[in-house]
Length: 461
Image (cartoon, rainbow, N blue to C red; front, side, top):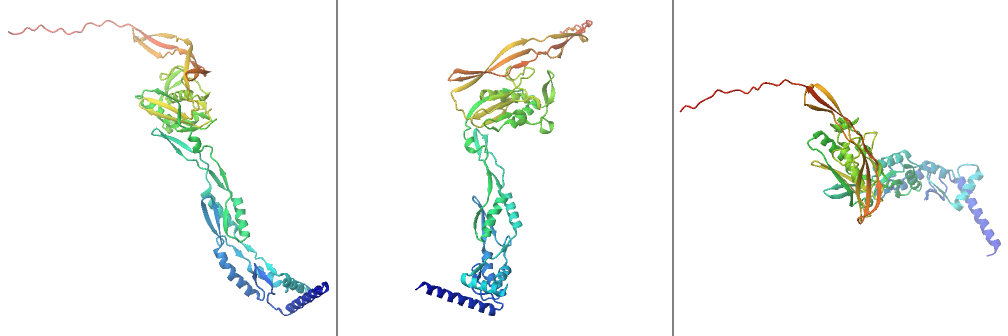
């Protein structure tokens, strides 16, 4: 077929279509022109109301069954299109379809019909939905999904460790999740929508705690269990410090762990040192807890950050090995300078308080011992006050005297019994406290012998 022939045939076709279009424009009346579709559905030849009803019959059942599955890991939630009031705008689409060949100038109508006949016309349905419902739905889901990250925990029960798994932190990203769901709605499709969730990993995991299996160091001190109030305080403070996990590089503070020493928290009055004297005070006995824990930390070879000795020697522990604390003033602090978490466990049994520190002993051949050296002793002076109100020979201690000491302490690390390092610990200074004694000077008159003389009695024979 020659080129001219092809051109001729093409012109004939165009003329035919144009004539048909012209005819259609002239006679179409109130019907939608042919070869026009809405969302792929042919609406040509229908009046607008018929086209709208037909579209609803075909598409509404589809929308009724359409849903999106919101997912996060093993969790899923169904979100039906009807839930967020998804609606097609049928009237708008049908109006657009009808206007092709019905609106505009005569020549424009012919052009539009010719274009529809040659290429077809497919009008996309616009839609609307309740975006606020979608946002509210995601906010409701966030209450179910969101959770704070929680470290794995460990407790010592009946001489064995029990570990509770860590919990990851989760926060539903509502803005991003909205965009994900909207993208599916834009396609009017169903399927799975993976929610955008910001995940925070916990700092301590089960795998970290599984390294806690070795007793790094422990220490015990004895107290007078007959002193009920002091014993009570020791028990409360020990419970506050027990079952505590200290992360690598973290500094433990005894004051922070124990908290305020107040009667409302159960603490009672017992002897405390104030101005170099033993006087009743709330929380007396806590320093025995701090001294015991201090020695457990020393023997565990942990780094001591803060420690101060008492101003007076303590009866329950050797010089140079005590540790006093005072709320908001003096603290006991030590750092977990190991590569693994450590676990502090305290217990009170009978008249003993004991602290053990567990962790991962990477050098089991090493041991720690503490040495002390008294470098100064200052005996107290005793002031004698003659007291005429006391009988001669009577002595009353008005103020207790204490010998002063300056003591150096050392932490010695041995490996296979051989010393490999010596660390000088904080100096211990115990103040000398001069005493006062009252001596009676009151003389008394000798008293006559008041022994009763019995009359002589003879036996009758």
